[in-house]
Amino acid sequence: MARIAPYAAAASAGLLLWHAARDTPASFVVSPAPLVYLSSTPAAVAPSVAAEGPAPQTLVPITTQQASVAATIEVVVGRNDTLDAIFRRMALDPGDLAAIRNLPGIRQSLDLLKPGDAIKLTHTDGAVKELTRKVSETQTLHVVRADAGFEAKMIENPVQTRIRTATATIESSLFQAAESADMSDTVALKLANVFAWDIDFVLDLREGDRFTAVYEQIYQDGKYLRDGEVLAAEFVNSGKTFRAVRFVNNEGSAGYYAPDGKPMRKAFLRTPVEFTRVSSVFNPHRLHPILNLIRGHMGTDYAAPIGTPVHAAGDGRVSFKGERGGYGNAVVLAHSNNV
Image (tube, rainbow, N blue to C red; front, side, top):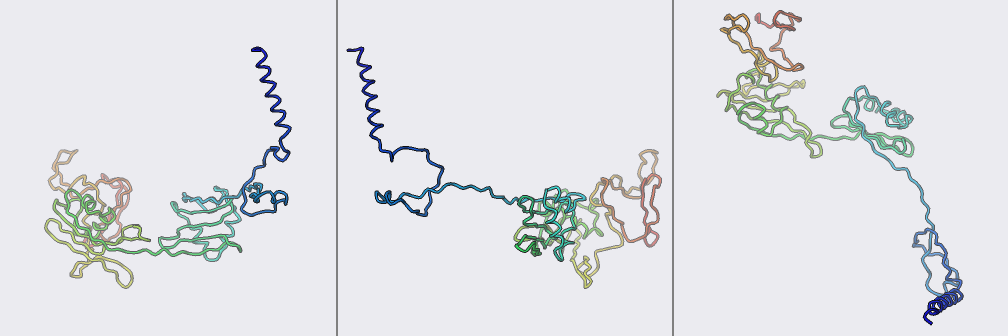
């Protein structure tokens, strides 16, 4: 009996599975279902099914379509760049460029490119949808594709001017003092130019000198852009006070004047080179470094990197240019009174 029991159990299981398959209704036969999404829109249901219970949700087959996506790129203009070169480099439709350039009144604003300018382009598979570029600090050119073709408009971006006052005391240098007053190097240089006729900012500055500057700050949409002009300033150098106010005449020419109305501009600048070191001072009793003799140095030498701007000390004419002895490359200016 023990040997027969496993065979009897297997036979019983086979009979049960045969009866189950025979008794299963045809309506319950399982077949693979198609890929579907549920739709919220009801559809007609066969009467025989509707009579048996509530209508099931309609099954709608999936349909997919690949849509083109617009892409936005920002191009920084390089040296000798043109719009044609940019369009070709970015694989944009040159016909769109021709259509945009033919729009009235914008060709000069569109074609006048400078290195560093930014152009924003939105396109779909190379077809331009939008083009934006800043023409000036206060104007932006915006071109957009419409149903009838491209349209262009100039958007105004006005700036706002705020007035700021900064005060500082010099401990080591003008720039260090400007930094401590949260004032930019640009304003510090403008301040030095205002008093350049009275103060040598290389030789004359002393610890304890102080200054006050009233100047413009330019903002756009609440964002700081840059510093503007110095409107008024005071500089105390070695105990002597200098004051200056900016004035613009009817012709639009600006200048700085003392409180008594006299111009700050004098016959000669105190420092004709911007903030460089003095390599040799004026000394009539100097020991010559090569001849080892007492031979006076009748001038002041400034050492500066190549490219540093050099200003004429005053109005005059060029009397000599070229190589001149120990001076090397030299420019000699003749001023009034045989100076």
